[in-house]
Amino acid sequence: MALFHPFSKLTLLLLLLTTLLSTAVISQPLLTPAQQDAVYTVLGSVNPDISWRSLFPDDLCLSAPHGVVCDFFYDNVSSPEPVAHVIEMNFGYVSDYTPNPPCSANATFSPLLFTSFKYLRKLFFYRCFTGTRVSFPEIPKSFGSALEELVFIDNPSLVGSLSGIIHNFTDLRRVVLTGNGVYGNIPDGVADLVNLEELTLSRNQLGGEIPLSFSKLKKLKVLDLGYNYFSGNVPESVGNLSELVKLDLRSNGFNGKIPESLKNLKTLELLDLSRNNFTNYGVPLFLGEMPRLKQLDLSGNLLGGQIPKIWDKLGGILGIGFSEMGLVGEIPASMGVHLKNLRYLGLDNNKLEGTVPEELGLLESVSVINLQNNNLSGRVSFGGSKFSAKFGQNLKLAGNPNLCADDKALILSSKTQLKVCKKTQKPNSAPLTLDSSVQVVVLPNSVIMFGTWVLFVLIFA
Image (tube, rainbow, N blue to C red; front, side, top):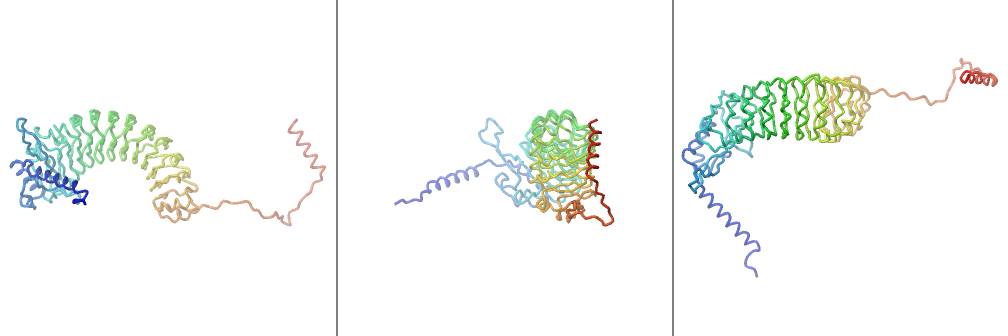
């Protein structure tokens, strides 16, 4: 008879491993007193209403607020003992899953962040500076050699020039400065950050042009400059960023022609150039050569011309925004045939004519079709009542007074404003009856035969 449960050896092994890990944690190196005090000072600058020293009296590498992360390094080659250093500092409560130290309304920016943590790899602030204006502190040139992620999200009161914020961070992989008070131009020095994989500068006060030197950022996967004041032409050199997955330049003042070089971005999945000043060149045909596109938005640019028939290789696309572009002509039926995964189609506020293609009823995955305010006409009939019931008010056809439908569900939808189509007149199948006042003249057979002979002579003479 066995004296132990069959899994007792595994249980003992786990207990031993847990004991060893606990011993390792207890014996791990501690923060130096200087770094410990610096962390308390930074926490106090972010939220002075919390007694951080009382809440976390122990070593902050053993017991720290969520968001403060340590690692161990061998500072001195001759010393066998590792030294603890803070490598991440994250501030601003995001959710219960990421309960970073919360920021108070009077949060300030401690300069110790850039003097006391030489091994810092990530610095993150979320909605910390929303009231009193806070200037970005001057960063010593000696700081930043280890920094990989610089993330500031929705801090509208945090102001500073981009050239003063980004410099000497040679190991940076992510720069996310969105919804802040960052101003000025993009300095040429950004192109020296050759390890950069993401540059998100949306919703700031930035202007000027995109530097030509951007082509040096060979590892860049995300470039987001949306909602700023950039202007000028988008340089052809952007097409050399061959690793790009996302290119978002929406809501700026870019003008001229959409660069042809973008066709080289074979890995691009999101292209948003909406709400700029690109004009008079039509929808670029090279879009049909970008098979990995999932989101495409050119809305608000008066490109003009017709919607090209370029959709046979874009079956993976999920959303198309072609609103307010001055488009003319008809909607290509090929859009319904090839765009099997499409979820959103926006063609509203153009000058499109002709009928609504029945092939749009083949878009089984689509959630919204917006064709409002065009010059479309004729009967709307694609997919029948099943199609209409699926979309309801998400099928938007208002502003096309010459459209009509037989489908009651379409007509009753408040977003379509369709009228009922007139019934097609059918031939009367009732027996022919003659009015009594009509006289019928019956010709003799000889007259009919003579007339037939005359007609034959005239044709073949």
